[in-house]
Image (cartoon, one colour):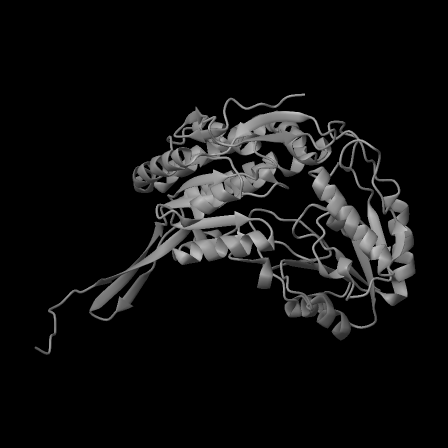
Length: 483
């Protein structure tokens, strides 16, 4: 089983390799088989990527926004036409089931390109009347943006960053995660085929040092990261030293609150999506599930029955509902958290072990009687491990939900919409759902507060993060000077 790209990097519309860079492997998480070998970007490769991006961006910014939009729209169409092949590639690289990648990965990237293609031509400044004089504002691109991706949604993250950057006149140099290096290259090739001028979306591979080189280079005006909180702190500090614009979407330990009047079948379904989709490897997952005591037993009974029917297996089989974790090392980390939950006294409802002897599979796992102080309730696990916590009343659960360093997401299930809005207004989270979970349409801004990030992806909010405002004062009379 192979998915070897034509080369490791895509720069200036061309495939590029430099075998003096450190070699690394992409493995199929379901079997551990090596599917591709690539080379980390050398300083010469990074220089080439940044130089071509800087040169290409100057002309790109002068183009009519509607022209930029047409190219992005063509790329969206190509992504949709090739969705199955791209989904198979994403499954091989991430281990996520094809059932999932067919609807959630390249398809989501196409939505982002289409949305920002239409947005591009609507961007305008303001006019400000000042009596005799006036002022106006312009929206200008930053210039060269560096994008750093995570391994859970590789092509989606690349498109979520590239689409607004390119629509608003920037160039982007994108570094995928070394765990999942392949689909960003496919996106770059499709953008080039759609008519994007060479150099505007370059892909360079590598580990942390490649990302650090992009974050600190003076040719980069803005950095956009999706990753863990520790990585975010390092990137924020590095970019801050150069006073660069920054957006970062980081981790979470998000609360999902289920009141006793909720539709339990829907709440159970949402809790499962919020913990087991992508094998739990989603930053916004609602991994602290607060269930009001009156319905806790009924909730757990329904949950255990449905979790037992989840189909784990070959990710390339469309009947498979849950695949492996990204790597053996990450599987061991998740299993260690499960052992910690048992050691601290949480009650194991289901799961709790590795699935099979091949690949990085972990059973969907649910703990009940979880206490707020337990490790599994405090730390981001990034695996299929759900913690169910009891609560009695609204004020109590709001305080406990907010008692975390994170603030990425939150959810509320109740038939009482007044209560739903009241609770959501008090939750310290950047993205919230009412009677739903983990739905992230491109039209809606997405991002967190506190340690979960800075800035927003998607929606109209992206304009604030991929452009800067220039103010112009227009004097229409004589200059009045005191000297």
